[in-house]
Image (cartoon, rainbow, N blue to C red; front, side):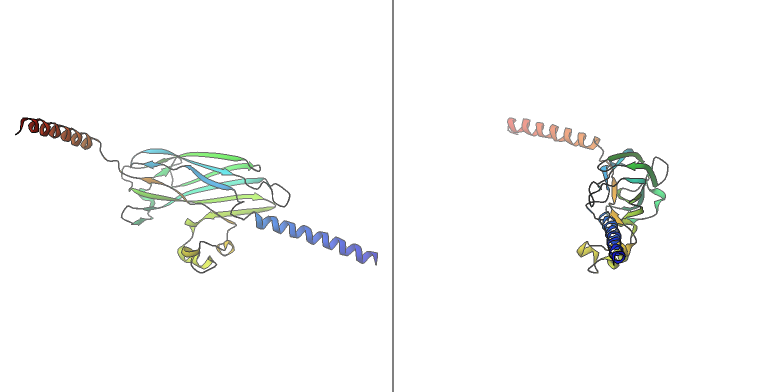
Amino acid sequence: MKGVFLYAVLFFLFMSGMSTLADVTNDMSAPNKIPLLRNTHTPVMSPGSTDYFNVSIKNRYTWINNQSVDILNITITLDIYHCVRPNGDVITDNSTFPHFSNGGTYYVYEIDSLKPNETYKISTKIHSYSYSHDGAYGIRTTLVFYANNKTFTMKSLGYFTNEELDNASYMGDYADTGFINITKLGVDGITPDMGFTLKYKMPIEPFYILSAGVFVFGFMGFYYLKKGI
């Protein structure tokens, strides 16, 4: 009888441990707990110019089921994947796209580890060509790390088609609901899309000429008005 009772106690403890582990894993995919990946400087550039592109990541696993969780072997990927022109056209051919400091439209950065509530900052540069199209450029992101005896893979929405998002939506239409079943997308969480803008600067010389013209003609009008002409 004692043996049966002991077995029951051990089984209960084992199952409780498994339940706790599963709960931790589920919590680690919650949008308010996954590592906070964000763009801290969004460049607005003119074609042919260069600017910094800054990203930060923060470990928000500070308290999950009475424990904090370090994240290890972190890999962050940035991928410039499309350009939306001012007229609404979408360009996906990256041959004219600006590039990162490594010379490509694809940038990978690795971090050894982050403790709970620790933030790490990444800085690279975006170099545009004089022939790069003006418009809003989208950057999709991937975050991979190891924690809680598991490798987590998280991606931004830019990696998925509208059809995939609709199929993964709880209501069948992602555009209307915004709710996603991440299991159907095959990821452990959703990271943000980022971006930057290229736009042509208005030449300042015509502004000065126009201002000077307005001043001269305004003065002449005032002068002739005083003369009664």
